[in-house]
Image 1 (cartoon, one colour):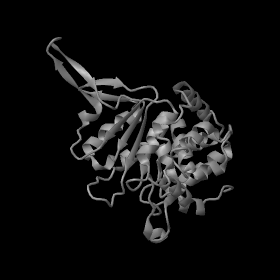
Image 2 (cartoon, one colour):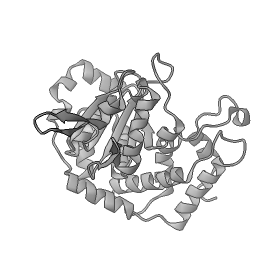
Image 3 (cartoon, one colour):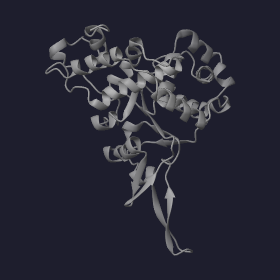
Image 4 (cartoon, helix red, strand yellow):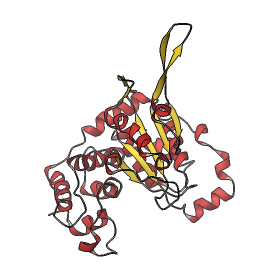
Length: 303
């Protein structure tokens, strides 16, 4: 089922199977996904493909500098016929939300997503309203070097289980785009492979994927290395170490295993770690790379 879903998504997102697998693992792990890249790389298309393949209700919110929290959450409107206020739900009340170009909105509007992403509910006008049982946020953002962007604060970045980059397509895939293959199939035309009930079942199975003592120790060594004074600007939080475990469990499941290998952790680590932890270049040097690269080069599987 999962393999078929990934194959179906690959009909639209050409040459990006690894990124598709990471995105699928993120949903199976009950996580929110941040996709950061230049405009035109297929970020929005990937979110549409995932909604279609997993049969999820889908809403797109275009973040702009004048977007208000009420535009996302909803607002009560006075109904003169009933003589009372009626709540008009915002686009947040869907199973999969695309927060498109999230870093073009003001910090106040960005923060409107925090409660939804963490607790599966929103509070509007003093009343708490539950979101759908299956609820995911896929946010896209342009590089912070582009004009008109507001960097996401660390507290909001930490709500995203994974951050991925699509990057430029391989030459052969781009050739197929130029020859018009993409025009032959769009996100809305691919098959619905996984039902919401199937996805709930997969999420429950992922939570039961076995983490051996050795694997847990490996995660702890990675985590505690980031907390050593001076090496990183901030160490990985307990939420971050749990995110590594959940992501590795989901990655193992979609590859047909009921146990986690150290290689699963190494595969998901860049997507889980690099938006949470930043190296201290004074400690490692200007060209030392990303946090995940430093950890994988310094911390061995065997200890």
